[in-house]
Length: 63
Image 1 (spheres, one colour):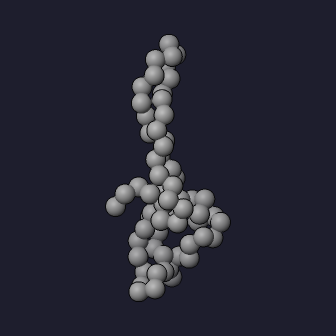
Image 2 (cartoon, one colour; image 1 turned 180 degrees about the vertical axis):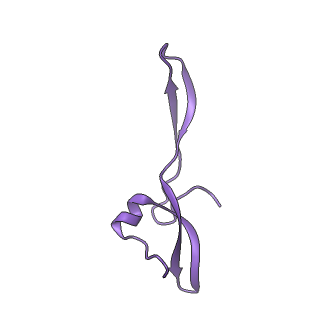
Image 3 (cartoon, rainbow, N blue to C red; image 1 turned 45 degrees about the vertical axis):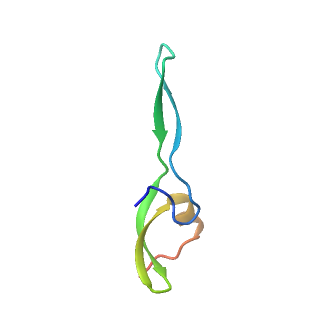
């Protein structure tokens, strides 16, 4: 399963790490994804959801 938010589609971003001498090396900025059980039409399913979508109530957790 890809590290992508099920609700908004947020995925890892890329950028540079900068050392003290300003040498650039590539790095990834990972979104804060949590694996939660959501209620879909055919039953509960485990998906990755970012914490911003969880806090906003964009997904309904399965009971």
